[in-house]
Amino acid sequence: MELNRRDFLKITGAGTAGAVAAVALSTMSTAPTQARLVHPKLEELVEETHTICCYCSVGCGALVTSRMQREYGEVVRIEGDPDHPINRGALCPKGQAMYQIHGVDGRSDSPINDERVMKPLYRAPGAADWEEKSWDEALEMIARRVKDTRDARLVTTDASGKVVNRNEGMASLGGGELDNEECYLLAKMSRALGVVYIEHCARL
Image 1 (cartoon, rainbow, N blue to C red):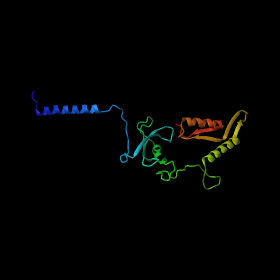
Image 2 (image 1 turned 60 degrees about the horizontal axis):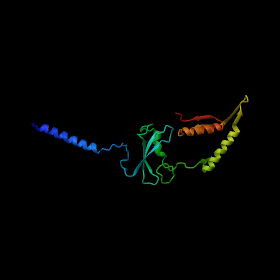
Image 3 (image 1 turned 60 degrees about the vertical axis):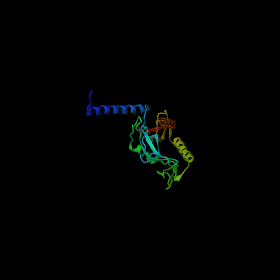
Image 4 (image 1 turned 45 degrees about the vertical axis):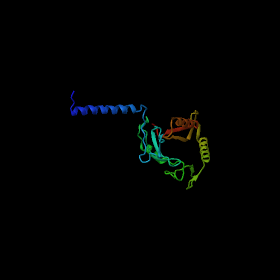
């Protein structure tokens, strides 16, 4: 069989390509792969953490890239988690703004939110300035006012004499961060206090 130059190149080229493909396939791992997103300029200094957005009860997944050169970490960026079944990599503007709540430890060297309020503040009636309170003082003050309001505004019976035990001086307004269990406990507590005005600001 005689081979011309063109046929020879075809045969040898196909053989070489097949050998390369066979070697490549034999060295490929069958283990599942996972996408890894890193900061291009800080690859050796960052760590990626999976988290859930804190702004509403949808529960979108997010990836937090943080620089680990500081003791508490410095957030470089926050983006949607492409592997999360709820948002699949998307984040609303509020979710993207999670970056702004970093620095909750209140340290003076925190890169963001150095002025974030970390303790309860109270302004007395008629006062112009806020004063700092401890958590024990704030909780005691809240509990006392809840008790006094319920005692003063509780309606035990209606006009026809039927027992109603309504607390008409209080209301409950749930927040978007509350999950189902927290909403359940809040509703139970409110009804135990006789509250009838129960609403939620972020119903889905």
